[in-house]
Length: 356
Ligand code: ADP
Ligand code: DP6
Ligand code: CO
Image (cartoon, protein in one colour):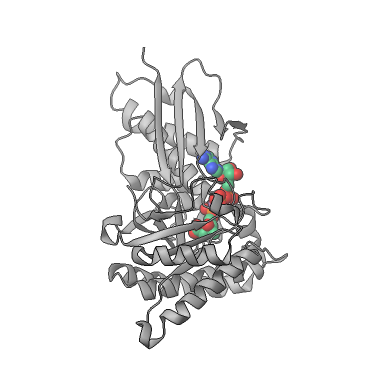
C-alpha cells in the first residue's frame, strides 16, 4: 500500500497593520484586526511533510530536524486534532471506503529556510504549512477559510499566510471565533510592483516570544487600549483603500506609523519589551531621510519606501520595484560590514510580494 504522505510549503507574511494582543488566548482571537502582505514563496518559506501510518504510536513533530514536544492541549495538538476532525467529517463519514486516517497518528517534519523565532514570521509560515500539509494528506475538500480558522489556532498570524497578496484578518466578534479568519483584500497580481527587502539584523531567537510578549502587553499597557479603540479601525480602512488605489505614498505612511505604534506599545508594556536594536533604529533613520528628500516638491512629493518591524530587530522594507536598486545601495553604503550582505540565508534581495 502506498504511504499516506504529503508535503506543502507556505510563505511568510509581514504585517502592515500589526496584530498584537489576544482577547481569547485559547482560541487565539485578537484584540484588533490586522493586515499583511504575503511574500513570494520563492524566498522565505516553511516546508512541511506529514505522514499518517497505523503503525505510528503517537503524533510527533520535528522542526528543522529537532524533535519538539507536542503538548497535550497545546496549539500544535489543537491544530492536528482539528484537522483529524475535518478528515472524519468531510471524508470518512461521507465515503465508507476512505481509509480511516483520522484514527492514525501523524509524524510531521518541517523546515524553515530562514531564521526561526527571530521576528520574521516563522510561526505564520510554519502553522500555515502545517495546516496545508495535513489538508493535502487528508484530501480535504475545504476552502481556505476553513484552513485559516485552524491555522489561527496554531499562531494568529498564520491565518493570513493561507492567502497570497494583501490579506486582512478581521478580528471578528463571535465568542466561537468562527468569524475570525483571513480574507484577501487584493491578489498579488493587483499590485505586483511592490517588492519587499528583508534586512537580517540578527538571526538569533528573540528573548520574548510573540505569544508571551503580547499577553504581557494586554495585561499592562493602557496605550494598547487606545490603539485598539481609536487607531486600528481607521487604519484598516485607510490602508485597504490605499492598496486598492495602488497609492504607495499612503500605504507607506500608514505602514511605518503602525510599525512605530506597535513598538511603542511594546515599550509601554511592564516590564517593557524592546524588539528593535540600534541597527534597526538606524535603518529607520535612513529610510526616513530617503523619504524626506523624496517628499520635497521638486522630487515628486511622495514617499519611496516603507519600513516595518515585527517582534524582532529585522527590517522589512516595502517599495516599488523601481526604487529597490537605489534602496539596496543606500543600505549597503550605511551598513557595509553587515553579515546580511554575505547573504547566508539567501535572503538579501528584493522579494516579489505575493504568491498563491
Ligand atoms: P516568529 O517571529 O518567527 O513568528 P514566534 O515567537 O511568533 O516567532 O514563533 C516562533 C515559534 O513558532 C517557534 O518557536 C515554533 O514553536 C513555531 N514554529 C516556527 N516555525 C515552525 C514550523 N515550520 N512548523 C511549526 N511550528 C513552527
Ligand atoms: C508582531 O502570530 O506570532 O508579527 O498568535 O501568539 O502565535 P501568536 O503570535 P504571532 O504574532 C505576530 C505578531 C506580529 C504582528 C503580525 O504578524 O500581525
Ligand atoms: Co510569530
